[in-house]
Image 1 (cartoon, rainbow, N blue to C red):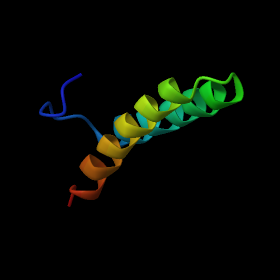
Image 2: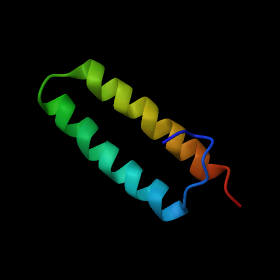
Image 3: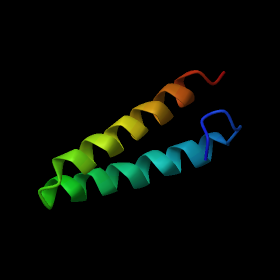
Image 4: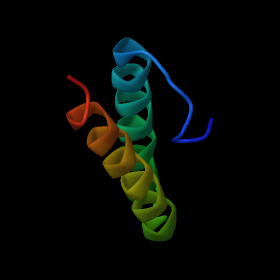
Length: 53
């Protein structure tokens, strides 16, 4: 899903929760590059959530 598409606040929060769980798993499994990529995606969703009224 592109950052330009309008998605609901609940969808953003769900994505953040899911990606956070995946990033934690990646760190536990010794995949720091994957965890870092997921954290970047989480950051983008948090920015999008923060820009909502």
